[in-house]
Image (cartoon, rainbow, N blue to C red; front, side, top):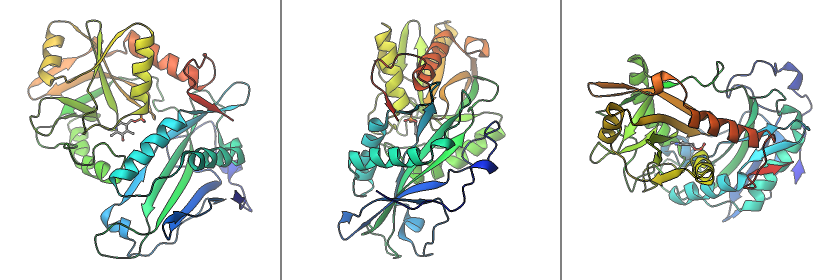
Length: 351
Ligand SMILES: *Cc1c(COP(=O)(O)O)cnc(C)c1O
């Protein structure tokens, strides 16, 4: 792969003991252009501003998809990328929905590998910290009509990030929305595409104003089935059954969701991907059968839920503290990611 190195590294300007999320970027980025019906040879170039036309089609109509995954520094200095094949699979699924040409697995994996090998010193050494990897593809035609772009650019940028929750796993407060929905069957809810996030900003803003962390999304048709939370998937432990909503066309198929399902089943837990109404959750809470609720996503891994507000009802889960299953899942997944626990499912791609 062609590599153009930066003349001046920014590594020493970065405080690796105090990292936030997504505001510092490593020295290089992966870049590949699609033109004349094919992806051209990829290259790695210095991270820099893009020069784009104000008439860039995707800037107006959002023909864009993205991914989010992480690389972790193990004690022996090696670097573990967590489940890149699964993220590649989802990238292509998003591509198909947005009429974006797919990217082959070798190009994706090799691109990440070469980029991180070059920028290996950007992978933080502090436990809890990691290198966030953001692949994305945008339509690159300069044209104001609504149509499928003929040209694209695929970029991968990386960002060293701190622990998602600085004070440990603090339970979040959720509220349902009577007004807004995230996705409808047949729409783009199953794709990682910017429009979904743009649509979620106002509901999230209003939830924040009321003192809640995130919106708990209910289905768009009947407004009773639970779907997702903010930008995470969601799990409920009712009695001894671990329940998460099924992937039926409105929910983003989270890699962390899949990881949790695998681990919990492997531990012999009863895990069901099934529909679940907000009323079932409230009634389980009333009967003291709702043990734990948590969100899952690459950024936070496991995000315990302490409270849920639905219409006039507010429930508190596990006294607003993290539950033992949530904690065990968090410890197991992060243990595998940092190379401290055996990677029995072959999830880490080590470089
Ligand atoms: C990215 C994302 C998730 C979580 O997916 P992971 O692969 O676990 O990071 C869940 N819901 C939405 C809407 C997302 O964008």
